[in-house]
Length: 354
Ligand code: CP3
Image (cartoon, rainbow, N blue to C red):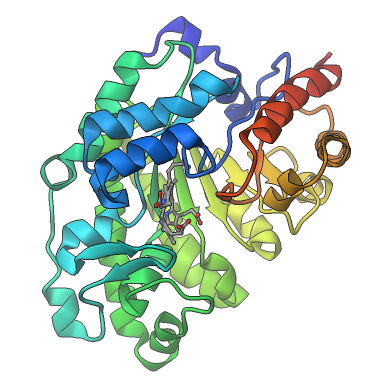
């Protein structure tokens, strides 16, 4: 049972489109390499996966940005690729190159070889990190759990590594759609089980990262990405009807109508669509999260001020806006700019909530 403090947290209120005194803010990848204290713990862990699989250290880096900045939510420190790793694909992060799998999915045999796992066992390190984080997090700050979308996970599993265009999964979509859908179905179950386990471990809201949904045609998006995310939402809501769920499709600006009808409580926007336009299409069906271009943080305080002001005025007075970047913060950003941003959003937004 959530305590009253938490129920009244601005972030959770905004997800329910309830009035808040100011616009809540958190930042995608808020625990990350732009923070010197993160780099220190990361070095201590030896590797990125070493950090993810060490619950004490993962909890510690989850809390780091909240010690520095007046953020309205924490997100558990982990990665979306823990699922394919648990399924036996063998995940490594090469410095400067991103994730690489030892095995990738090419055919039916590869799918049949995937391990069907219990997240409470195989990903117990994530559940432990959640429990530890909740013990140390201020009781008024919600903790976000997350997963990749089935399509985005399938992209990495079929390609075997990061890519700009993910040509391999896209090729499979047109040469062997049956095989692709078999994988997506299996991932839908794995993501459902993983998110349910995160809820049972103590997270207060969920976010699904569909980083590569924007690579698809509208038709393929609906059938390969959104359909499975909507199933996951249904699965979660059948057990936890009031658990708030945010969907974020990068490049999803043209798919907003479908996203707003998915059953999600909140839709994350990247920076390629005006939040005002999104609001007009939205008709108060969901809350909205976003949508500052992360590169704005390279700019001066004046430029940040200008962009924040633009977004807040476009989002307008209706409750249900959670300020965020349109994608993850990058390693070279000055943490001082993040503090400036967080405080600015809080102080400037009060005016819209009178
Ligand atoms: O937001 C947070 O603070 C929570 C932590 C988090 C990470 N990854 C930590 C991370 C979350 C929510 C993710 C999600 C994730 N991981 C996504 C979806 C969101 C997005 O960014 O589109 C994706 C596609 C991944 C896969 C992934 N993980 C890639 C492609 C990379 C390499 C790119 C890079 O930035 O180096 C990662 C590594 C990763 N995940 C880092 C962090 C802090 C950096 C690695 C390091 O510390 O060495």
